Image 1 (tube, rainbow, N blue to C red):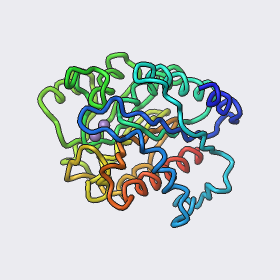
Image 2: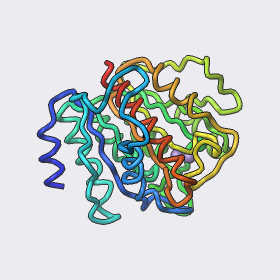
Image 3: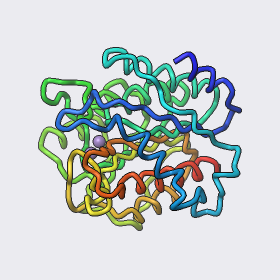
Length: 277
Ligand code: MN
Ligand code: MN
């Protein structure tokens, strides 16, 4: 942690920091997401492609971002505190965070840190699942509940969920109680404009993609988005993107690294979008 804090303090204010959070203690069905950051980086830096984003930004030559490596998590018990501390340091430094998870439970401690800096935050969640369970399998802090914790604590001004296709009566009731705006996959239209505030955080669960595009996830949910639809959504985001996470990639379920490459592609577009404003 001390090494990472030192690394963060070397960043210039306004820079985008890519940070890996190799944590899957919040998985309830199939872990493996802790191996994601190293595999996504292999694809990101692979000679099979380049570091150009579609807007023409050459990330290999751009000094506006830096990969600061992985957060060293000392134990499951300490994980959330360590995540919040690292992200808090990035926010204090006035940097933007592009986080590679990890299972989706990490979004709660990340948002605790971001909300300290941006109390009027709009949170956009792309996911096949609402992750709004009050508790799931007896747990309140797993990958299935981060957005319930975030909304209970009033950490964001607005939560918009896109791509959801596994609703239950409990999840619908939770969304209604918390005032969550849900754009379910069955009503999703790429032309729809998502209304967000000035400061935006994007939480991208890889299972929002159709399993045909991203088989490397723990919970396959057919009928999802194409990679192109997500890219367009990132490129068209309004406001200031202050942070983002790409979570739930599970290399154990991947096929020829296709999901790692999709995550790396989306990361490039997120970095470029962050540096464009
Ligand atoms: Mn999901
Ligand atoms: Mn999720």
